[in-house]
Amino acid sequence: MKIERNWQGSFLVLGLTGELDAETAPDFEAAADKLIEEGARFVVLDMSKLAFISSAGLRAVLVLGKGLRAVQGEVRFAALQKTVAEVFDIAGFSRLFGVFPDVGAALAKTGM
Amino acid sequence: MNSHPLHNPENRRSSFTGSSTRVDLLRLQKSVLDFGRQCGAGEQNLARLKLILEEVLLNIGQHAYSSEPGPILIDASPARNNDMRLLTLAITDWGPPFNPLADSPVPNLDADLDERPIGGLGIHLVCQMASSVSYARLPEGQNRLVLSVEL
Image (cartoon, rainbow over all chains, first blue to last red; front, side):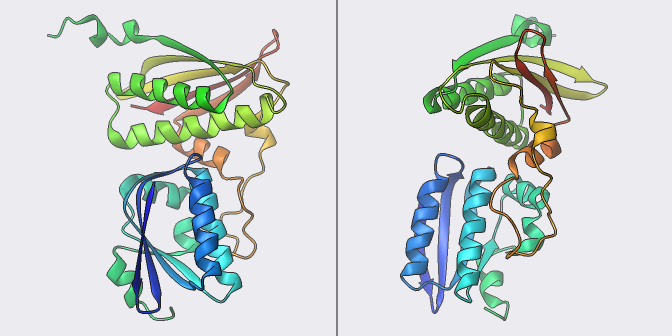
């Protein structure tokens, strides 16, 4: 999986490409920990190029969400593909997190 | 009418074996996914199948063979339930008795972020995405999970 970083003001947009599964989740968790250490607080995950997520991937984004909450930050999710959206719905993540149709909408909502 | 033998679903029954090492689990997952593709599964259903296989196979690696790797057998066969095309998977391991359907806690999906435990979603996802799931401990000493996935 590829992670592209793109700062937009105080918001860090992470573009995920590929699959977030048991193979790639540990790398994502390590990268996310490092970003919080480096000062990221408000993160938007651009999921438009993420084709697949499993429970290991859900675990990784939950760890990121909790990590950001602990430093008064927040994670939001944008542009979920259909397969990923289904997993988010079943896991209750669509209610747990802010999920937006695109990155612009995720950045535009106040409170971030 | 197409007369190729592979177009008769009954001819496509297939078995896959491997051990619970990480490399083998990935190979098994890929083999069954390829089979699902040959049976005509669409992208959305392939993604479901992939997720189900990842959760079930990792679960076997963690619970059935936690101390050392052991064998896994997957029998896959296309089936039909009214108008629905299904792929039925019978997944067998030789580990100690473990019923993932009974022994996995039901996640609280309404918990707040602070209260939400890390993990515990795998079997919930499997049960929601499969058309049917059942577990049996066989008299010969195997765990068998039988599940159907829409094609």
